[in-house]
Image 1 (cartoon, rainbow, N blue to C red):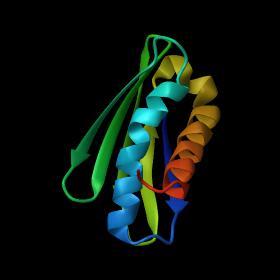
Image 2: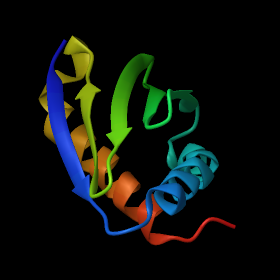
Image 3: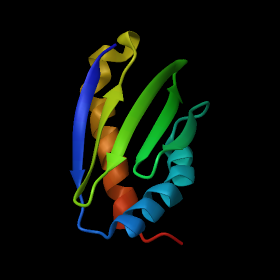
Length: 104
């Protein structure tokens, strides 16, 4: 299974970054094509795992929030390996957008 590491920098207090990421998960669901799914779960204080269902495949995003960034890894099914760069870019763009918008 191909893996792509990522880092998205931020300058928010950790609590605010956490709130924005959690608030962004439902919005992420609305950005997926029909039939796409997102399941999110927190892992400890600083981690989150997103399981994203696309085109009958599952992309898993393991992330960890630090004081200055969101670091993680995207695991991409072999059938989607040719799109790994595009998928990783979509993930980092989504995290960047989530961090940019205040939690409601």
